[in-house]
Amino acid sequence: MIRILPHIRRIKRAQKRSIISLEKNPENPETIASDDFLQDLELTLTTMGVSEIGYATVSEDEIFQQKGILYTNAIVITAPMDREKIDTAPSLDSSDTSFASYAMLGEIVNQVAGFLRTNGFGAQADPALGGKVSFPNLAEKAKIGVRGRHGLLISPANGPCQRIAAIYTSITNLPVSSENPHAWIRDFCKTCGECARNCPGDAIDRGTDPGSEIRRPFLDAKKCHPYFEDRHGCGVCIRVCPFHIQGYERIRAMVKER
Ligand code: SF4
Ligand code: SF4
Image (cartoon, rainbow, N blue to C red; front, side):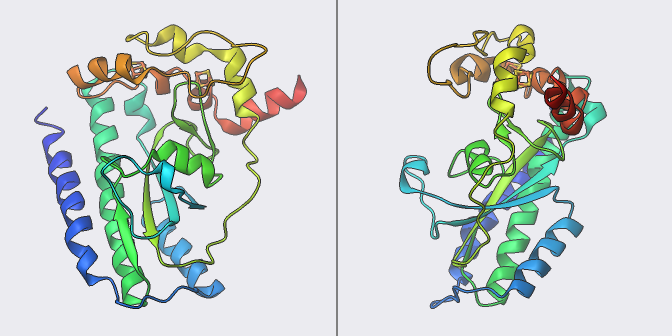
């Protein structure tokens, strides 16, 4: 616990800053960003350590109860966790990297919100822990990846080994993509089930659910949370996921060969 305390302090600072800084939003924010500005923004995010960037529009029913967002245009970002530490999950090391990524993303979204405001845009940072929407859903909507059976985002850069955060902005011309090139992951998950077989909380459905609507994700959060919270983290479902062990590209090549 002592090891993760510094990360928790950073996370709380980021959450507080995301609220306090809202008063700095311009009264009449700009709504259109040039291509050059968006390219600069992506470059800045990459130099900050962000792995992947996507864009989505948030609908009202996606916002958690008693939470609110100022703008429905979302910039969604991911940051990796330390692979070697996740390989020891459940452990202090795996919790350490998980909270470190939450903390890092919290700081990044606040910096980006500040950068957007400096350039005349409205912005609201949504740090990675205690978000206003389901980040895996939002990242899937932003076409960064797809939610796996374990409920986590699986993406090319990090497989499931990452955390997610968002910045909501007044920019209305974000380059939102229409197709999700990672949709095939859903079929792979139906036949894999490795996370379900290894989940210590028995929180992930083992069925393939043939012939009916795909129930995604297969995760029962009520069973996961007690186990997760008792140990200040878990991560077994990340450690055993083939997208973590072998990587996205190798799994995709294997699926194509079938
Ligand atoms: S975090 Fe642990 S308890 Fe929760 S779903 Fe994953 S493996 Fe199961
Ligand atoms: S372990 Fe298998 S079933 Fe679970 S999310 Fe990863 S690929 Fe999907």
